[in-house]
Image (cartoon, rainbow, N blue to C red):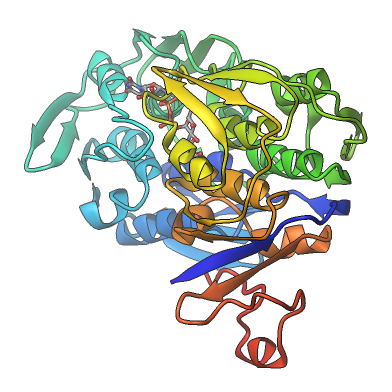
Length: 446
Ligand SMILES: CC(=O)N[C@H]1[C@@H](OP(=O)(O)OP(=O)(O)OC[C@H]2O[C@@H](n3ccc(=O)[nH]c3=O)[C@H](O)[C@@H]2O)O[C@H](CO)[C@@H](O)[C@@H]1O
Ligand SMILES: C=C(OP(=O)(O)O)C(=O)O
């Protein structure tokens, strides 16, 4: 168990490199189960807890997986099981993404129900609706979902009631080996879906229209392993952009793709932040007082729900009143209570949060209630007066590679301690004792 300790007041400057996208690499690893021939090699695979979890799932299915230095080798030629047990799906909902590949390749799969989580109930009805339309028989019992098909899945026209990222990905993967053509309407358009489609197409699939609301997949006989590089993580990039802006900093976010971040960049610009994109990244300069803006989360290309809490942290230091409306998940304001502990003035009214900016934040002991809430609390800690201790680091480790090191590299006063260790209150440098024990700026072990 550990905590992040942040001491506010340091202006961030310099350059930070974005890792591969969590939300791309997870479906891509799941899709590797479709490779009946050869091996896949996936580059820029971030060393995140979620990546380790999905690797365990693949290994439990009989795939051979090697992870070294952000490169994953996956050989899924001989699978020995079709079941993803509770122990893994409980840890990470994205484990459910193995359902489409297993069903289409093996004709049968049994996966633990993913259940709800802190941010919402997160049903999977749209995934199942898609599989059923393709001819699968679905049974639910004892906390598991069983799906089977006599012969191959059949291509079908599937309209998604919500533009679900996971359902689009799961159905798209299932359709690659189905008989005939599948059309997904009201498909999600996230960049991670395009990355997955590119991966599937290099494996030999025929996916067209990914990134638009209509995705067309013509089934093929077989897929094979390939080499692929994962796109940079737009949420991680956006988090560093917020961290730069909140400290009045000047930071180059290397690897950030401006196009993927268009709604975040637009809001930052409205607030008075200067954004200079180039072909290798985005420079963020915050040299003026920040203005309040309203933010509404929406499916891509709308403002991402995964940046909502970090944006809220930034609005806490802006001048005026802002309204943040969360439309994607029904319970994604858990961080508000934690911000209150830091003296923030936020009122929640249904799906909206009303933020009175400019009230000085004070350091406090807070808890990451989910992955992005954790990042947002750290952003707030960067400008709060005094010390902020953020626990619940297991959430943060799901999605941020070396967060403390990357922020320290920009000049932030942040480090990680084991919870058993006393927190240093006076020195900004790690003590010799701490360094010996490797406690300050500890890295995530994988
Ligand atoms: C691993 C991954 O890529 N995670 C991302 C993915 O999650 P995930 O794929 O789980 O999110 P979805 O796009 O599926 O969920 C969006 C909304 O649709 C609802 N829904 C979803 C499926 C379904 O069958 N029925 C249904 O009602 C959900 O409850 C939610 O309210 O997209 C989310 C929305 O951008 C992001 O916050 C997550 O970071
Ligand atoms: C909600 C998120 O991820 P997941 O879907 O994996 O829970 C996230 O990345 O913010």
